[in-house]
Picture 1 (cartoon, rainbow, N blue to C red):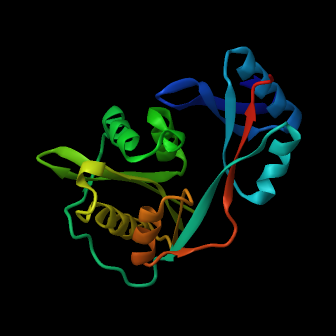
Picture 2 (picture 1 turned 60 degrees about the horizontal axis):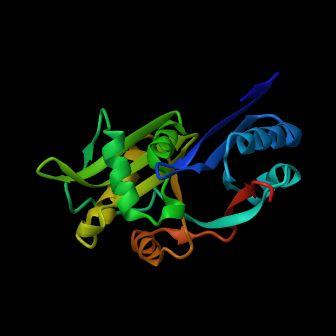
Length: 226
C-alpha cells in the first residue's frame, strides 16, 4: 500500500485465516497507517496486527487506533562467551522448502503464534544476511531455525521443532548452530523473543546461556468496527 512517499505491507497473519492480517509500516505516519487499516477492513479483514514493537515504537500505532494485544519476552546472549557445539547434525538450507517449514511451524505453535509461509519469508528477509538451519532424519526436517545478522547483532528470528520429536536435542542444536553462525558473521550478541507462556522455550534459552531482558515487546491490534 502506497500513498506518496508512505509505504506499508500487509499479508495474512498465517495460512489458516485470511481475516487476520499482519501489517508492517515501512514509511509514513499515523494517518497513513489508519488509512491502511481502514482499507484492510474494507477487504473483509476482521483483525489487524502490528509487528512486535518496543514501547517507544507503539505511539504511532496507538494514534492510528491500535491497542495492546500480545506480548513477547526478549532474551539475549553474548556470543563472545563460550558455548557448546550442537549435539545433532545441523544443515544449512540453500533453498528452503517454505511450505514444508510452515507445516512444522504450524505443528509447533498455537494458532495465534503461527506465522505461515509469508511470515517465514519475512523472517528470512528481515536482515541483510540470514540462514535457514535444519535438523533432519532421512532427509525429513524435524526442526528449523531462521537466523539473521545486522550491524553486529544476530537474531534468532524463528525456531520450531516438530512436537513428535521434541526433547531430542533438536532445539538446543539449532540454537547452538545459530550462535556459531552469528559469531562467524562477526556478531557479538544474539537476540530472540518468545511468548511469555512458552515455558519450554524459556527453559531452553536459559539453559543455552540467554538471559531475559526487562522490557517486553508488544503486538498491537485493531479490530474491525462493530
